[in-house]
Length: 268
Ligand code: DGL
Image (cartoon, rainbow, N blue to C red; front, side, top):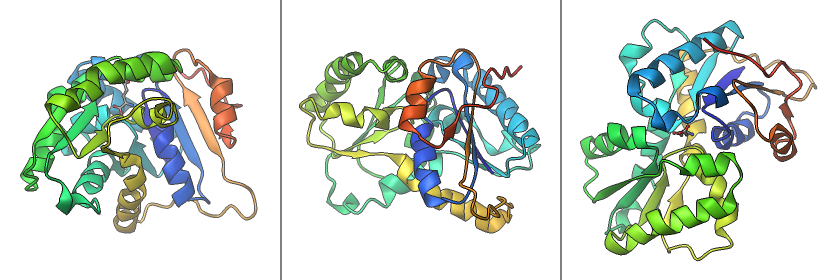
């Protein structure tokens, strides 16, 4: 079973990619609503929270954990996970792959924008990793503190208004070839963008590159995923902390999401 966690529904974008890449596996998804938003918390808070969640997932029998949250991914370093034996895949490598191996990379001339939470932007992990791999175009970090909240509450109008005034407007000053969804919530705005005038830049969802990173870790870790289901369909166990908003909407969007398990899990 693969464990996936995020502060809320954003990591479902990663679950979607992984469940199609690994269609015979079970998933355990934790939405940490009670602790959200991660992006407005401190680095120490998020390191500790991520460690606690991974340890809890180990007790539930997961063989591999995906931190489906760029904020956790930007603060979790190898030294934080030495005491944890379960392999952990973060969003950093998939995001680097999505940028550095992009098929149009050679044609880019202007630069890229990274849209992310306040903590991710403050840490600058992705920008630093890009530069240390020789990425030589301008990188424009754009912190979007309220955006995940608009998405959590299905507030289309709030999200679009915010994007227009804080993000798209910045492209006039700093033209870019691509904008990176540096928060797993942000790809969920894609269907909402149909209704508005979007600048002509590539939009990159790093979730599409997670399966490769997971497959890479599995090949070296030989972590057993329990792929012995016979004909039983795979399940997605959905857990959350705090108050779940719109769990029914989630279940409608994600037909194999199993919300029948106890959902009021509280993590200390
Ligand atoms: N989805 C999370 C991320 O990828 C964070 C959203 C939040 O809780 O601030 O960074």
